[in-house]
Image (cartoon, rainbow, N blue to C red; front, side, top):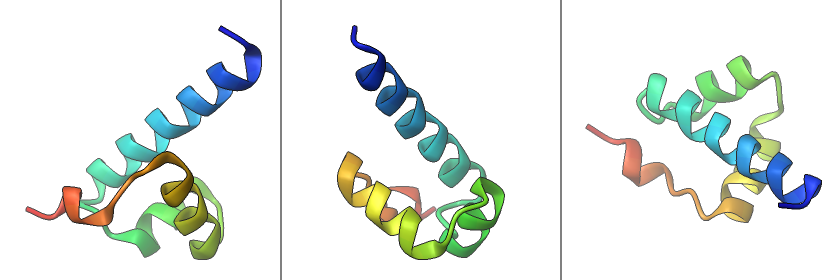
Length: 56
């Protein structure tokens, strides 16, 4: 696995874990990840993550 692929895999996994821990609350997830909310949206789109999958 190339380094950039490994980094992307780990980033996606971390974003998913954080979103799961905050029940999909994007503001809280962005705060924990220390990124702007817009950056989180872009990364979610990049990795095919939809916020609906975290709703109870």
